[in-house]
Amino acid sequence: MEYSIYKFLFPPRPETALPPDQLKRYEGQGWCAQFKKNGTGTTIAISPTKEFFVMTRHGTEHKLWQITDYHKQQLTRLFPEKEWFYLIVEVLHSKTKTIKNVIYIHDILVYKSQVLYGSTFESRQKLLDEHLKKNALKETPTHYVCDPKNKIWFAKLFLKDFSELFYSIEDTSVDEGLVLKMLRGELGFCFAEKNDNQRWQIKFRHPCKKYNF
Image 1: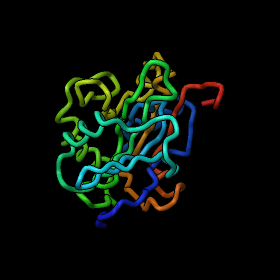
Image 2: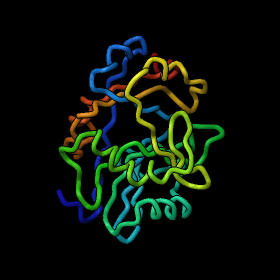
Image 3: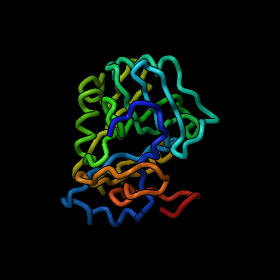
Image 4: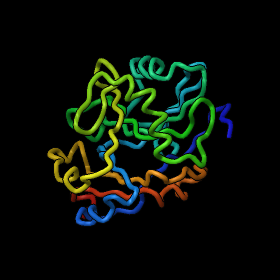
């Protein structure tokens, strides 16, 4: 489906939350893992003329954060084509004490002016690899750093050792846990906040006052 003008698309996100003792059940079953950062779910649409449309996952404007000129410059460098791109990210800023103005990219819905309906999560990650992993300046245990000032991160993908990854987390104020996603999970329509995309994702979080797991 062609994407030619800005329209808000609700990002895929997990609604199901399970305790970490269930992680081993998903090993070798076609799932992958990404670290779940303690950020604000955000969508960033980039137009062919490099105009940026930034919304929270609810389709509302950010109250505590604004995309900077530096972010725009770096995202333009990473996505230079004169096409539409629609990124799904976490913004680490208002919820973390020391990490500010960081964009953590973990999915994409529009690539070169095409909405990726019907595409698998695995195929969309390969598209992001070409722009982000390929141009990474360094890597950490959870992500690739894609810019000189350490403000644009790209989530790593893990295919095994989910339980070990979960319990390797030391600072839960930054890494809340893991999100498991089906590699062959297909992107469905994103017109409503609750949609079919929730079925191919599960979250596993460390306990805190807000939730039990």
